[in-house]
Image (cartoon, rainbow, N blue to C red; front, top):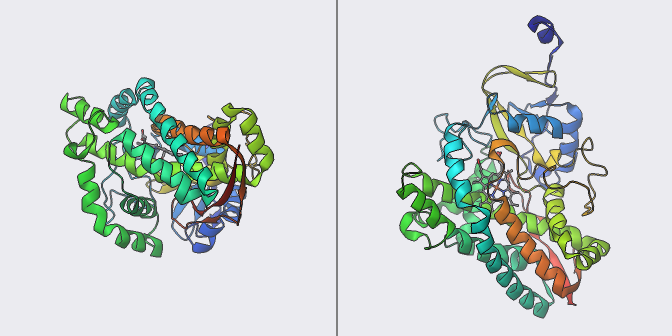
Length: 405
Ligand code: HEM
């Protein structure tokens, strides 16, 4: 086919006049997700002047092809290269190869399976201690008392950064609202985090991190000249920013799914290895990162749709992970789905695929396994509620009752 014939067959993106960052959509994202998927392989979101993808096939293409869809404009809706929209970009997530490749190689070595295995024992001990408390209490909030309590203890110990609850949650809320448009949520989260910014900056510096931790290994790599000056603290900052709320959200979703369906809890109890599938299905069903952006490097096309250059394109992972073209009965939480890990895109794909996924899985599986071993039944005592955050889908309250085995 000649270039002219190819161009002639291209269509403009269908226009969608829905704001995915409105409170209405953030409270109930499913109608938007469906509208986006059904609009076409890619749509133009009129309220923000950006492209959006909600189907699995196109999401994979955009995330894999950094030559046409760059990370250098940042993974939020604002272009971090534009004056006024500047924030400190992640030296991993907001750069393309070859700069990305060099940093990623060092971080991958630091997060080797050997290092992670060392931390897994600690996760199991902490999980057991927490489950003892939860059983004694009987009724508790599955978010604050369980997912949050566990991750805020297990994760900082491994990474080597002190993460007190109030400060950490305020920084997380800022991080995942800041990547959206400058709406009320953005401004409120920025104001709320203001008192903790200096603390956060200090806590990711060399002298603040715990000896023997993952952060310590990153600083050692910097001292050995494997990373440029300043990159270690930047990566630690990405770890804390990217690895805390996301995992709390994922554990919460897995627990929510299991608590709603006693038959699936029984399956996990009968076959503890199924906690892996429970976590994967949790993050497929309610993807913690609802959206991540790229920027077109020039005029291009995607599945027959013409795209302008230098324009943001959002990959709506929440929509993608419920795409009926990829999943049978996608709205159902089902731990028996074939081929979960590697097929859902909750952890991304391509060169930027989540580098902390082994940690997230190690933590979540430790907690779910300890619960499955020692808890006979887990039930919801009231409907769960969600927080409203620009980029993230995260439970606010998950009222649970458990009965000891
Ligand atoms: C359930 C938990 C988690 C989820 C759902 C998640 C999700 C993701 C996604 C979707 C990406 C790719 C974003 C993109 O391509 O735009 C990513 C990348 C990343 N994640 Fe995670 N993540 C989780 C846990 C963690 C943890 C525990 C850490 C830290 C230890 C972490 C650190 C990172 C970093 C540093 C990147 C950037 C990697 C790169 O650019 O090469 N994440 N994550």
